[in-house]
Amino acid sequence: MKLRCATLSLLAVLALSSHDAGAAPLTMSQAIAKVQRETHGKVLSAETKTQGKKEIYRIKVLTHEGQVRIVEVPAE
Image (tube, rainbow, N blue to C red; front, top):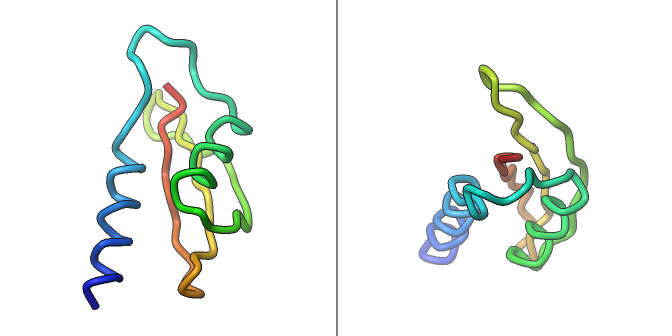
């Protein structure tokens, strides 16, 4: 249970974190690489979603624990 909470916390941080405000927007490939690097999981799929005027990359990851998680990364 503690491991699951830690994993959920990590994924929440990834979803809310973004890079420098003055930097160029992330590409889908960069977002995938970031999620793969930070979760050490296997990316199963990725898609772009729009929330209002903002783009979000929705990335599905298979964790080492065998669980599928969704990580959302802002493009900006």
